[in-house]
Length: 339
Ligand code: NAD
Ligand code: WQD
Image 1: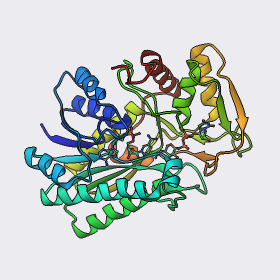
Image 2: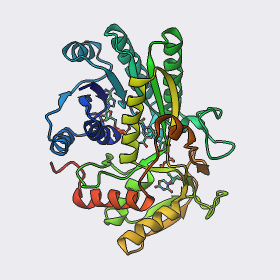
Image 3: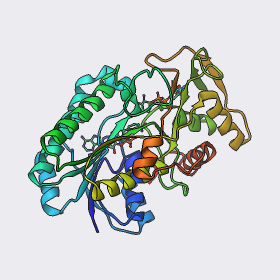
């Protein structure tokens, strides 16, 4: 059984991916400093996989701790989720973002090199495309970033390309996620942001259960079907499956590849709101407010390369994404806090 080190494996996408890894026949070892997640998620992953999972509560910037993990376990590949991800916070705290995301990745890559571990899957983001000139977005489109979070992703992508140039025996998958939403169908795993959510879907689920009074829709004067922003929402379980396909590729064919993980179709904010309302059979209260600084009108992926390279095609619809997100909110009214 191949051993996969999952950094940030207690977090939202990481936890769903660990479950997928077991389904695909891999063993996962998790390292997470719990800066944005709760330890109880581990118990839930163990319950779902019916497996005891090795967990190291460490920071990826702690070289001695990482070295110990690689010494104690023969790691075949790393999936690197660990990082900070809030765009607005990154503008306020650029040093924290550069330190955590860039130094964290650098240390990880150094320890991998010392232990001759050659395979890595990296969590990048559609944010590296900035404001695209056209949609759907193909992987070769020009890159540009407007905030420290996005810049940290772009810098790491460039670091990985340099490392590959210097050592072509490295196998590197750079995955650019579009907008992950949803939850595990059984409601045991989901998205549990701290405080008031920044992102659309976790905000709507809180409005849906009355924890927040209404949704603020950031602008209705974009050049889109109804004036509200259009995004490519991808079910987190589909996204997680993309990771096990990327690993499979790295284990069978060497090289570096960069691939979009999205559905290839965009939905507006109001379409998402109406989808939730349909499932709930009640209105989601919302107010149109000013545009949010830094937002773009439309963003969705061209998925042809993911299909060709990885045989990756999403299976879940927007209805399933919203239904599963709601189910998680209803079954876990205080997120993981009550565990
Ligand atoms: P998350 O915050 O839920 O998970 C990240 C995990 O990493 C958390 O459990 C956190 O405690 C841990 N972590 C952070 N810094 C660490 C460090 N220095 N050492 C060890 N652990 C650390 O976020 P997520 O939504 O699961 O995102 C995972 C990755 O995917 C991130 O790199 C993020 O930038 C990227 N990404 C996320 C989205 C999204 O919308 N969720 C979109 C594109 C890319
Ligand atoms: C989606 C749409 C908003 C909240 C962010 C990051 C990106 C990636 C995914 C990590 C937009 C609108 C939102 C609200 C609203 N993360 N909206 N009211 O901005 O596409 O992407 O998460 O890599 O880097 O930037 O996602 O969910 O915040 O917004 O009207 O309360 O919903 O304007 O059109 P975004 P989002």
